Image (cartoon, rainbow, N blue to C red):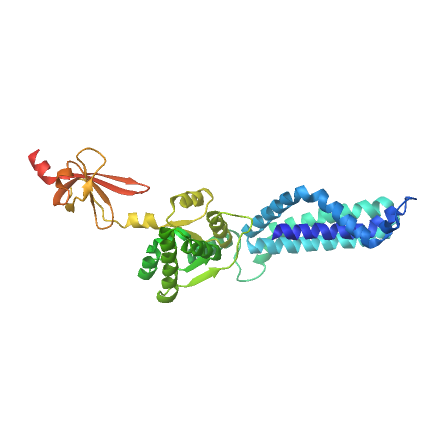
Amino acid sequence: MLRKIIQLVILFTGGTIGYIFIPDFARLFITTPEWLVNGYAGAILGALILYLSLYLFVDTIVNFIRLIEDRLIKFPVTDLIFGTVGLVIGLMLAFLITVALNSVEIPILSTVLPLILTLLLGYLGFQVGFQKRDEVMALFPGTKTGKDSKKNEEAEKENERGKLKILDTSVIIDGRIADICQTGFLEGTLIIPEFVLEELQHIADSSDVLKRNRGRRGLDILNKIQKELAVEVEIYEGDFEEIQEVDSKLVKLAKVMNGYVVTNDFNLNKVCDLQGVAVLNINDLANAVKPVVLPGEEMNVQVIKDGKEQKQGIAYLDDGTMIVVEEGRNYIGKTIEVVVTSVLQTSAGRMIFAKPKLMEKAL
């Protein structure tokens, strides 16, 4: 959208310049065609010339504008207000001085100096307004300045961010987010971007049966969260058309809204960490609330299949934690008592190593 707006501005600017200057410029030549002297023809010609001249620089202009946009969004509102007020005062002073200089019939003073004064006083006005904002606010009773105001702004930002939880596609399909909301451990407003809903709809319409079932499950989970749970849900209708990947859009939205990304995607978790975006990983929460198991503890497990290594058996706890039972292949299909030998915690989850208690007694 921004790219199209810039292209229209270039066409309009070129057309205006062409309408004003091209007919006069064409009259300087004796053999000029009559149609070129027409203002409308000059507007079309000027628009084409400027558009073709800047066509290769449109992306650069778009990136520059987006860079300025990101910088302005991160600025506190008070800084922008006082900086803008200072800029306006500086420009007004430059205008008054320029009016006084116009009465002096000196070419340099009436042409070059007003431009220099406008740039200089505009810059100085912005800097003074920006740097002196605390002193100006101190003139009004009841306002806090200095470190107290900065601490309050940081606390407000943190509080605002704590209220916004942006859901990604994977955590919706996973379904555990509904159970977490039902228990009341996740507070604040849940933000569901429209581009996430579109991705869910595409998955639900897939020809692959597994993908289709996953997509429909995600839509059912959203309906449950909206209709059955006492949690505030908002649909974000905006989009970032210049970004193609849904994960990149989520990171961008989290930066704009200053919120948390809720996910169980390991790769998205890493991207958020690299870009300084707060993230809540459902898998990290699940691992944190699992019962603590220490070496030497005894438990009853059912060995259900053989392991990768020779004579190993595999069992599972109720929360899905995998237990590797040494010499457990002979006990497949049986419930036995085992002794924990070690616990391995990885980013993918937790793994417990154990051996049958009968073997422990034999040793």
